[in-house]
Amino acid sequence: MKKLLLILSLAAPLAAQPVQEVQDAIVADALAHNSAYEFLGHLCDDHGGRLTGSPANQAALLDTLHQLQAMGVDARLQTYKMPGWVRLEDKAVMVAPIQRKLRAVTLSYVQPHEPFEADVVYLGDGSEKALEGLDAAGKIGLLAPNALQRRGGYNEYAEGLGLKALIRTCRVNGGQLLCRTGSFQGEPISVPVYCVTQEEGKWMQRSLARGLPVRLRLHTRSYCKEIDTANIVATFPGKTADTVIVGGHFDSWDLGQGAIDNGLGIAQLFGIAKLLQQHARENLRTVELVWFNGEEQGLWGSRMHVPTILDRPITAMVNLDMVGFPKSLNALGFADLVPVLQAFDATLGERKLEKGIDNVNWFGSDHTPYQLAGIRAITFGAYIDPDAVRYYHDFGDTFDKIDPVMVAESTATIAALTYYLANVEGLNATRLDEAGAIALFRDAKLVDRLKHSGIWPFADEDEPASDGK
Image 1: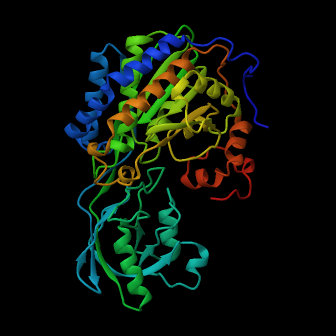
Image 2: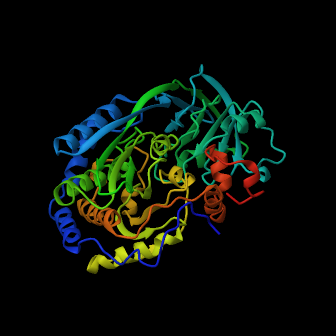
Image 3: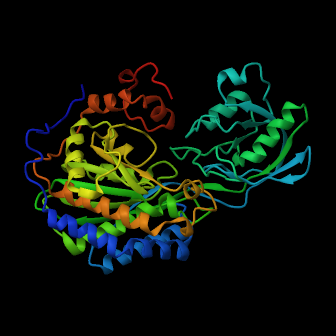
C-alpha cells in the first residue's frame, strides 16, 4: 500500500467545481485563436534545433521569455549548470566490403578521438545469450534495432567486451536516425557510440552473416563540457500556496527543428500562459508553468527544478511531452487522482476524451523526478499522425509536420485541465513518503531501468532483486 505524508480526502474533492463558463471560454479562445501554433512556427524557423547549451537553444529561450513578459506574464529564468555536450562533425565510413560514408550520428557525451579503423562484429540484441562465445576484443560492435535502449553504462559495457566502439541500428526504417543521450548522468563516454540507419545497419549484418568482413573508419570530434543553461518558470499566484505545476521540455536534438519533440509542449505552455492571462490570472491554487532544458540528455531541467519546490505544497505536476490530439489522461500510478481526472473529463461535454482515464506509470520524461520526490504526476495519451511522428529526433522533425488543428485542440484541453486542477476544491496537496515512492515504481516494474539510468535515489535494500526491464 502506498503511503502518503498528507491524506487526500476523496469524500468531497469534487463537491465544488471551477466555474464552467470560464473553462468553456478558455477552450473556445484556444480553438478560435491558435496563437500557440503561430508562436511555434516562428520558434522553429527562426532558431532551428535547440540542443541544450547551444547558441540556438539560448536564443530561442530568451525569445520565449521575452514574449511571455511582453504579455504581462511573471516569467523568469531558473539558471543552473549541467554536464553539456557540443556536437561537431563526426564521421563513420565503411571501408569494407565497399567504400561508403554512412548516415550516422553520435550519442551525446561521446568524446573526441583520432581517426581509427576496426572490423565490425555483430552483437545482436546485446544480451548475454547473444554474446555467448563471441570474440569482440578490438572490434566495433554492431547492435540490432531491438537492442536495449541504454541510458548509461556504455563505458562498462564496451570495456567488458573489449570493444573499440559501438554502433546502434535505428529501430525505425526509412533512412531515419534517432538521436539519443549516451548517459543520464552526463558521464563522458570513453568509446565512440553511433547510431546508423536501419538500412545500413542491416546491410552490415547481412554481410557479416555471409562471412564478408565489414570494416569501418570512425572519427569523432564532439566533446563534453559543463554548460550554463536555464529553465523558464512562469507563475500565476493563487489564493493559496498549493501549486499545480505544468511543464514540458524546451530542448530538442539538433538535426531538425524539434517541432514535434518537444515544440508541441513549448507551444502548449505558451498557449496556456496566454489563456490564463486573459481568463484566469488568479485561481484557488498557484499555477507554475515550466519549460525544462536538458530533458533529452537526462531530464536535467526537471531534476534541477524539483529541489526548488520541495518546501511547497504541490498538488500535482502535469507533463507535456509530444502531446498530440488528446485521447486520454494518465494518472501515472496515483490512484487517488483517477476520480479527479474522471470528474474533469465529464466537464468537457462533447469534447470528452475518447479513451477516458488511464493509470499506468512509465519512465523517460520530466514527470519522473517529481514522482521520485513523491509528487503526484499526470500525462496525456495522445495521437500524432505516424507519418509525422516517425521523424522525431531527426532531420524531418520540422514545423511542416505540425497540424494546426492538433495544436489548437491539445492546447484547449490542456488549458482546461490546468484551470480545473487550479480551482477544484478538496484536492489537497499530498506527497508520497520514501516507501510509497519506491512502491510506485516497483509496482510498475521500473526500478531496474531507473537504477540503470543512474537516477534511482533510494538505498539498495529498498529495491527488489529484479523487476524486469
